[in-house]
Length: 406
Image 1 (cartoon, rainbow, N blue to C red):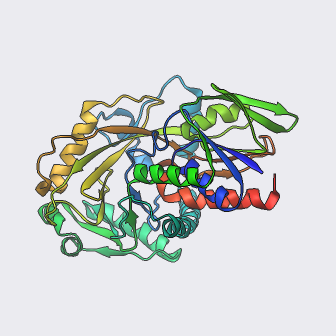
Image 2: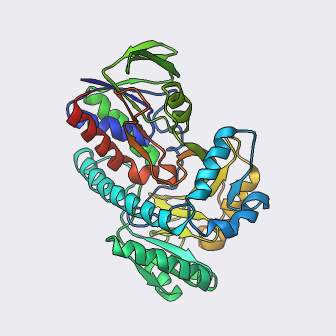
Image 3: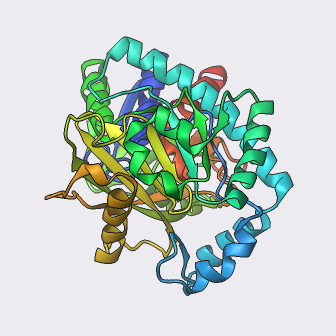
């Protein structure tokens, strides 16, 4: 059975990997190189046990700042875009305690499956992707913030996560590079099992491995639409001509909404714009963290990938705007200096932006949709957890396709 996977980000490549392991013939199609979109410069953290949804009751108190403050790490700029308004209203409707609890449970279950599938892939492929399993600290600057984090910790513990609340001194014992930031911490949530890796390097390794296993790649090729016969898609229309297959998987990130609409399906996927910088660090243990760190006040994450430090953050609902404002990069650089002053001046920040495909709740769309043709499956809408959830959602999709055989 021939399956065409549309999209060569980490989700599409993980899908191709799982499908090929199950014996499917696979073709991967993308308008750019593998990992060139939202996967390329992401936060690098694999947050299998700490998955607090963005749609949270606390958003209501933050709403004036989201709409008005130019410096807010979360930014909403209303536009004449019906999708943005529809998505935004659904997002606000999801900002309640019940939905947040349900979303947390669903994401933790998928993340656990993803950890297992990711570890299996690493055991088979042994990719060069700067993988580490040194844990994660989520820092909180105030007792009020820490109290909110404690409630999320207790919820996640009930669902099987192993993590604990730690004092500022315990933070420094876990990660000595935080010593200069002690006065800014009220405490943190420590999850010892969390991991990190370079997503782009993994995408490159997966492409090479898939090619050796017979997977065909059609790259630098835009997807324009579909050919249909009744309730099935017979081919995908591309800039290089039609490509036929028995089944199609849409893993096109934020482009999934437009193409899904052509198939008669509404996909509530909207770009959640983020930024990152990547700086070289000295080998001195005090210079940069080994443990992954999230600064909850700044909405910035720090992840060590080899001899580099990835610093990522921001969440903007501003449409498909690929510009990189200097102020956003300066904010990330300033955060790095504030939290880890020993890193020293960076000569090249390797500034990046990406459009993370987000659903209002944060739960990705995996599998078939009733409105869409029977032989089209979807794997999109992972938001800021694309790297974390990629192999779990790919395993679910591959299993669904294997069970139905169509």
